[in-house]
Length: 219
Image 1 (cartoon, rainbow, N blue to C red):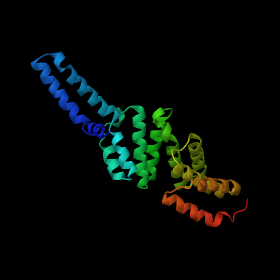
Image 2 (cartoon, helix red, strand yellow):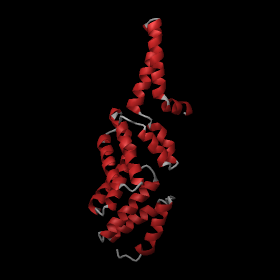
Image 3 (cartoon, rainbow, N blue to C red):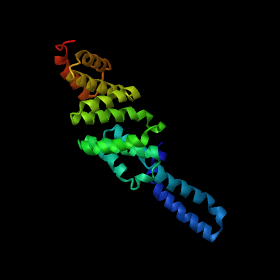
């Protein structure tokens, strides 16, 4: 795993080195002795531009190091050369970083672009629900509750990757239902969120805050 990450990190440099060596071997001997060098160079260069270094981002995202993740994303100079599913993940991650900075307008544009590219992609099936949830949260920020409800319902239908995301989705739906004065539905969504026993501090705090008054609501 570590070797693979090192290879991905220096894949462009290695590809160029192997290409230069292949040319020299070809010039001073013949094509066939240089064939394997050409092959390694082509695989490395194509992999760099068409797959990118997105695998390296995982550890940064898990650690919450958005700055480190952004540096890797910014190293991709030609995103349009990425395979379509990879490009979809690229824009989705860029949207996540913009959202973490509360740049909601940029986040919405990037995440919509990522979702459009990823539609029907097997690579995006695991993250499509989370992307829809984030789009719903962006709509909530703009106080567009109708759009927010649509996105979050889609997110729940598509499936969310873990109980933290599921709980966040149910809490948002609870808020929307209460705002629409559909108190019974709001309470049902709140119970679902609480039953998941999330551990994210922000979500735990939201549950505590809502619990103070939700029992007083009719329905």
